[in-house]
Image (tube, rainbow, N blue to C red; front, side):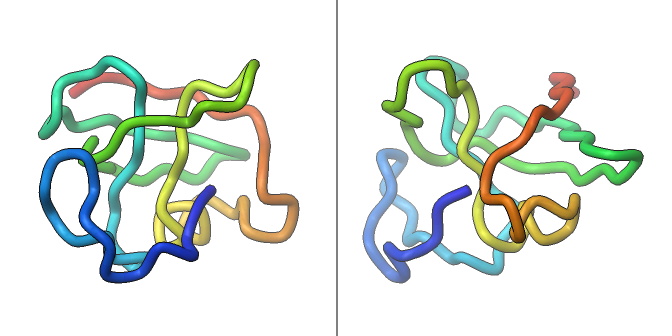
Length: 84
């Protein structure tokens, strides 16, 4: 997850809100809704940014979304993402 850019503009032009249910993806259109599941917990996020730019990663969740699915202690993990 990512969360230190509070208030900065995302690639879509919106301001980053770490408590929001948002995510970054390299190619999905802005506004795409994803159901992200990790360890039996799910959250619906909206793509509003580009990234992650680290090899092997496909999705960056906002702090709020990562907290909702229980990823904040590790920072990274395997999730299932379904386009809604």
